[in-house]
Length: 141
Ligand code: ZNH
Image 1 (cartoon, protein in one colour):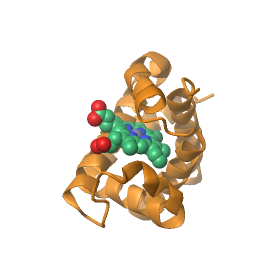
Image 2 (tube, rainbow, N blue to C red):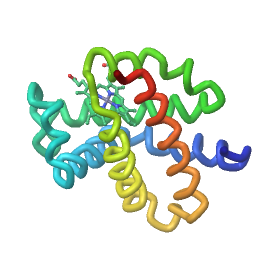
Image 3 (cartoon, rainbow, N blue to C red):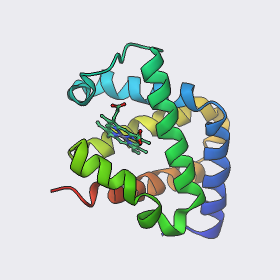
């Protein structure tokens, strides 16, 4: 459960990250591909080399989707329903992968926010990304 303070903190954090969504998103994705190479198999059809146009645009989409989730945190299931269906039925992403990307997003945020990545920000982000991932994975068969 997220407190009112945590929800406000999350909106602030992800609004800020949205301003450099391409950089933040592509950094997190590149970390995921490096640390968990199997995740690359889902992206065989696109160029995922560092700072490639597709990596940047995909990174941006991910960050904006997360920011949208933060603004709609009390209705995550309905807000993310189309994205959840896409990942489960069309892309067929195995649920374990969401934890891997969440972890990489946390590391990217920590490097990006530096002193602003307080224990409270860390805890709120961790809880939020878990909830977000649970919704994305819930339709998986
Ligand atoms: Zn994902 C896609 C988000 C996770 C894989 N994605 C996508 C999109 C978005 C997202 C927004 C776009 C859609 C449209 O276009 O409509 N994701 C997301 C998020 C997350 C995710 C937010 C978390 C948090 N994904 C994920 C994972 C994986 C993935 C984990 C694996 C590993 N996705 C994917 C793919 C795609 C997507 C493959 C497609 C791409 C292209 O372009 O093709």
